[in-house]
Length: 206
Image (cartoon, rainbow, N blue to C red; front, side):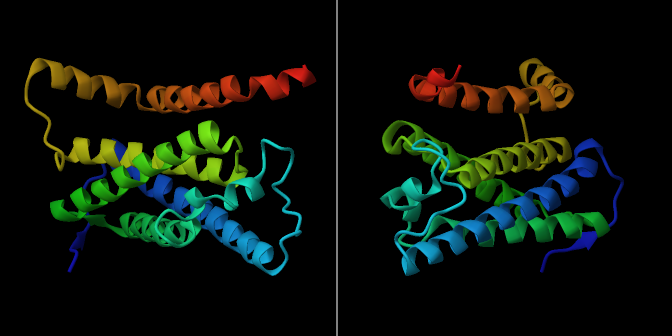
C-alpha cells in the first residue's frame, strides 16, 4: 500500500500536482475524443472528422495506419489508462505526498516509456505517415511536460540519485533554474522539425 503523508513542499512538489492534474485532464479529453472518432469511423468509413483540416492535418489519415494500434488495440485506450493514473496522482499530491521511493521510480519508468513512445509516434507521423493528428500532438506536448516535471521532482527529492560531483551539481542547479526554458526549447525543436518537413505544402499560403 502506498503511504501518503504531509511534508514540506519543495519547488517542484508545488508545481507537479498542477502539471499532473491539468495534463491528466487534457490527455483524457484527447484520448476520449480520438476513441469516439474511431468508433464513428468504424460505423461509417465516410464519416468526416472535425480534425481533418487538410491533407497534412488529418486525424483520419493517422487513425488508419498500423502505428495507431501498436499494441494490438487503439493507442488512445492506453492514453485513457495512463492519463487517469496521472490525474489521480496529482489529486493525491494536493492532499499529501506519496513518499515511497519505489512508487516514484515506477512512475518515472512509466513516464520515460511514454515520452519515448510519443517521440516514436512523432517520427512515424511526420516522416512515414506524412500526416498530423491535432489531438495526438496535444498528447505529445502533455506527455513531454509531465515526464519533464516528474523527472525534476524525482531529482529534487533525491529519488533519482545523481552523482555527487561538480558536473552533476552544476547540472542540477542549471535545470532547476531553467526548467521552463528547457521545456520550451524541447517543444520548439519538435515544432521546427514539423514545419521544416511540411514547409513544401504550407509555403504556398505565405
